[in-house]
Image 1 (tube, one colour):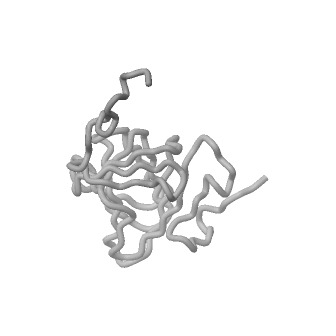
Image 2 (cartoon, rainbow, N blue to C red):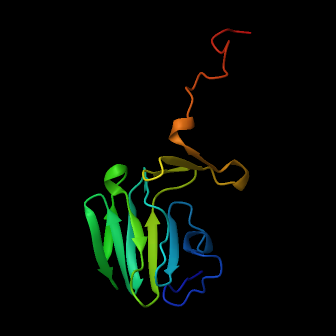
Length: 150
């Protein structure tokens, strides 16, 4: 049996991929360490609910209804879609550690409302795409003759 200690796991790559370490195929789970003044990601939402557990320290979460301080032991759930938009920030003088988890699997989609971007995460680096919504085209763009049996 594999185990990951959420308090002492060494973070060498910006986050600890707990789900991969434990060979999960049904859950994504990451430990994020936030230095004072650092954020974990831009304000975003996904199409699966996400959960956040504050393991150590104090953070501020930006959500659609404002900013909320959270401390060690606080657990919150972000619903899917725009109502679950969030950004984690460490505005304290001490490091913070969080655990984010969800049932989201690849392929996954993230939406960044502040910059009007969408990200597609298919599970391989070559096909990860992040683009401005304004650059979107209709599904039929470049598909002339798609309706003909050629």
